Image (cartoon, rainbow, N blue to C red):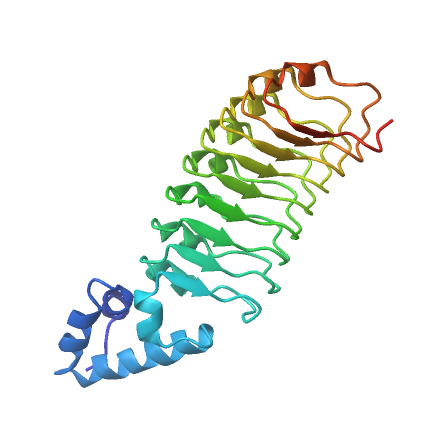
Length: 252
């Protein structure tokens, strides 16, 4: 009996879901066409995720694909128990939109790839606390980044960024922000909304001024601004009462 496209997709969803995987296996026992489909899915997924069995992938909470893949397969969206995902040191040029389904993900590391854009709905990863995207080719960020309300650490150094989305100021739990070695000429005033920010690295850009709203960063203790284009000392820095470390070397 030939399976319809809708049946294939329904079985695949059930088969790769950790909550229904066992039931899908039981359902396939009496249907040879489903057994064959299960074998095909298993072989395809295991080939796409080298070093892992299907069972490991389905129930994994931590998945390390660093230096091992050429692209991140769309099937990643099925592995909803993931809390930590590593895809650093590959040559990834994009991330599949299905990544937005990983609602339990708290840590995502994708440094040293070739990423130019992030999925528009990356803000759907509401549990995310650590997002590392250093050493890519990002030149802009989606507005939905501001929806990552639990984010504590955001690493964006060594990209091609010239600006930040306005929603950056909504990241009230953000404590560490790394923007060094990009192409910023200015930081948005909305950065003043980062009330929990403790560390800001913005050296190696083309900054000439700081927004007055930075006076709101009353937890900021480390501020690195070397190798920019400041021609005078920004007055707003004098209002940062918790500042302990300041580096402004190699400015004008």
